[in-house]
Image 1 (cartoon, chains in turn cyan, purple):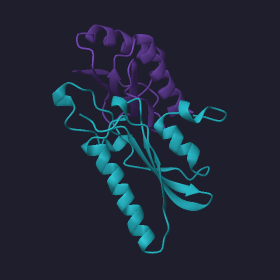
Image 2 (spheres, one colour):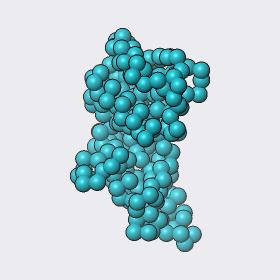
Image 3 (tube, chains in turn yellow, red):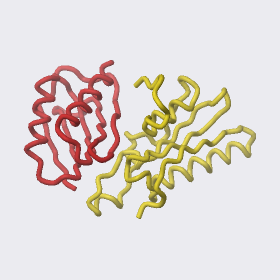
Image 4 (spheres, chains in turn red, blue):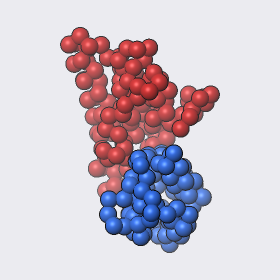
Length: 118
Length: 98
């Protein structure tokens, strides 16, 4: 989907990550088809989302390696639960590990969240 | 929350790629569309609004009347109206065959 000219705040989480990364470098980790969704929500009668409301995208920003963590604010208020929280933590730990080994990975967090998922 | 399963006879055209569109936001839905893996097109709907199975059946009938496709579709719905559902399905099919 073309987002040229669109307001950044109007974009969804995936489009925001794509907009931040250099053209053609966007590569999503644990994308929706991996179906890493929350197992806690259906028993509470809440429909899960296939990415649990967080997009993890690797790519480059100004030619430097980057990982963008983009929260979908329109899914359950952008709340952080066990699964999407683990996605964020895992991606940051990977970026830290790579950076310590000399391969610098810039983490970028796009926070659009009401806080902890209750 | 209600889970609905539908099957339709498999159509002529399998999409060359899988596509994800939409968000499980109020009045909205996400659609995951892939090439069919079985002898049937399968549609799984998880919806926050219970008791609208016949409405979903009508929407899916209309979609497959328009598109002769071999697909597997997963829908996560948060109270979208039928026109919104059809628009998302059209968006997904357009992107899948683009």
